[in-house]
Image (cartoon, rainbow, N blue to C red; front, side, top):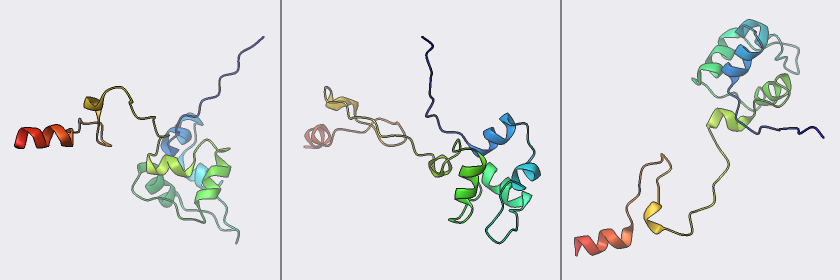
Length: 111
């Protein structure tokens, strides 16, 4: 029996465009608004560079054009939450990964 691996990995727009061997203008041409107009290459450039987040009208177009490989979360760098470490309170971390001081121990040291 073959194993199928499904990756729920974030895919940044720039990586998608590169992987598909498209340029930004070609990708922009796939983003057709309800009124028939297309998103500009300049806008796609800003989205791909992380300089601008697509608005509510454009975001679903990007998701559709990428077959769901690029999602809104990919623009916000959101990853699934991890379960807290139940075993060791000394391992607390800030969102950026740096170690967080234990407030109880910090109080004891300050006293």
